[in-house]
Length: 494
Image 1 (cartoon, rainbow, N blue to C red):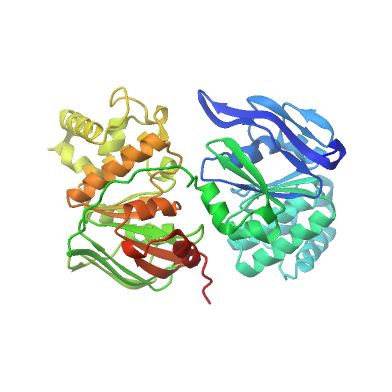
Image 2: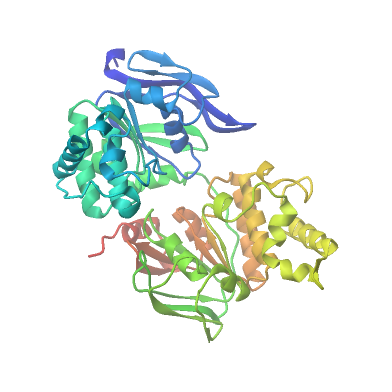
């Protein structure tokens, strides 16, 4: 490939936090007018690459060539000046400014000509086939309009390279189609695009190639015409590895949780049951509604309709505190943000949801806390020098075990585990699988949510498959197959 055909080349690009490498020795090239998807599990390094190229994060080692010039350091202002536009997951709009003002905020001279500003912004939306009042403040419009505003803000600077981190996450299906047409128009104008898709299907809508990331490293770059959805799924979830799963005994017939016709903003008419001693798998692609369903059962998201029966009594998931009191616990997918206190020690994290246990006459019994922490550190084989160790210093696998210990300390009998092995190495995966097997033998019931369908087939008694907020299949062990789960996970609902 001629160097003149390239817009971007990274050379040994590395980002470290202490001894932890978030992006490790990355070298990839992007042609002018090429749309490349960045795919991988959470924490694989996709968003970090975008942050380094846009100057949002500093480069630890390595460099990148952009449009014939080498850069070892970058900052957001310089990135814009040289032709790099970025749309981050977290929007960077100013709430009290109008849509029009936000779109042209990077061009201060434009802000003095309000009528021209409004006219230009209105035309940008009209070019997309949308009618939007661009004089509205950003804080007064819905999330999808904010997302479109962020996208237009990046495009009006006429970038040579556009960095997009899940830009369709808040768009409706119709808006996403409009957005993809816009990307193809930019491609025709020789704009190059690095694109983190929100769903796997988006890769095949606009992309020329796919870069697969694993654990901060580039695993492979594959032309889109050499790839199927199933192959992409296997690559992203590293299902080429050989893992052993414990033999899980049949659960009791006793139903501990019955859910009927559950509905929320992202969940539609979902019904299922969970038995004592059962591992119940939930499969689905990104955006299928799996995590939203679990959040609703746990009381984080509000249900608009539906009935739940917990151990033969009606249950209303009002909030997480009520769920914990009733014996339902959730280890969320993003546990480092939502499930744990990384700046506190291991003991504090384990006992935090069961503090009433350790109080007497208003005083905390520190000895009882220490004994409980020691018990769960031993039972779950949490690798830590001691219970005073700050949680941030521990591995991702240890983070999951601490989050699980927190639920066990709170006497939860129903454990909802969302992506428990994501970012975890093979050895720690095997430990987690064995641990889950022991828990169901003791009578715990587990709802296992995973993007790793092989993992679900290895661990679950039954699997429910979800797509677009609906359950599309219930499979028993004799019916498990990767093809069948993939087919039902990709099923389009009317």
